[in-house]
Image (tube, rainbow, N blue to C red; front, side, top):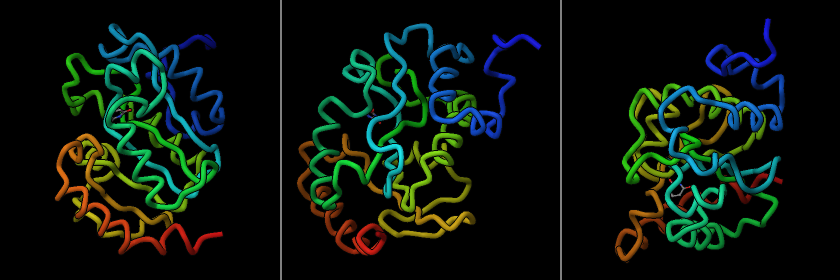
Length: 197
Ligand code: URA
């Protein structure tokens, strides 16, 4: 078998065997959906490789596409503020997205794009091994799970991880009431990441 086979043939468990560097290599060469055609950079992850808390966003925007770093633009400033509010240290969190390439005009990724990128998402989650997974908005929820969650209400996955949906940081820009609500949801769930050593 060719070592340069298309990523379409690679399953989530094969990706896990290749480790985070292998996943990165596969994402970089991926041409499985049309999103790669206009991507300046693939946007893979930022943060710790052993995070307590993993944030899953929607898709790279313009700044992220230019820099190759998740949440480095305006929404990223809001997310950094929330991470501070959560009292998380630099080595306690990581950030990834449902898809690794910027959708044109910042549209939402399609169901097909989410499905195509899902093996990367699931392999990243498995290898990063967080205790708490925070889905930022409905698209992250769609990419990750089948059932629907209530905002700010944590549940436990079959793998024993705490899973919670919060508002996407872009939705909080200039919306003070929503930001206050988000902070209350964080306050109610602080134990999830503060109890874990
Ligand atoms: N919005 C996202 O969902 N992800 C990013 O990386 C940036 C903005």
